[in-house]
Image (cartoon, rainbow, N blue to C red; front, side, top):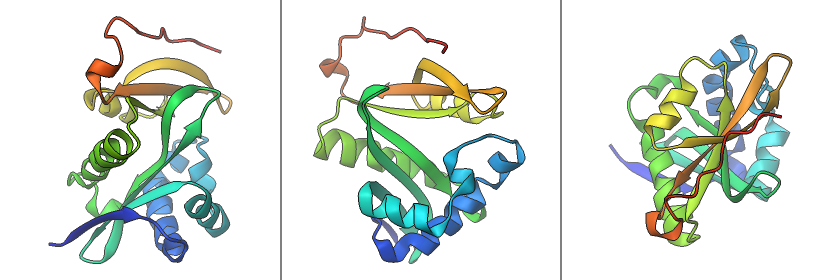
Length: 173
């Protein structure tokens, strides 16, 4: 099986949209108000052009995607978002591979980021524990929709670059 990790190009937008809509279907059904649940081709194309969208291809097919951008109002570290895995290959480690690639090769090694941030829904049944198992720690919360909280989590990528004793308490807004 061939695997290619690469930055998405505008011509990938329809395939990336298909992965996102498939992966976010269950999130839509849970009533979680992530922007990606309402994604359309224009949103995806703009994201690919304006931000840093990465894909994992297996045998020529895009099977996972994740993007990053600055989110200075919340964190000084790169912010990961629109993380999606094609439901046909979910639970096979595909998402973990792409996440690890972006964390290590792109953010830590190329951009020299000492940490990374992402966010998820408090009411999602398994995303928060999954990110915590991957080394992410909650530090901030804010409202998401009518009855949910968006939980921001950070993972240290370069342990010696950030003092261990520094921890940001979870804040509710």
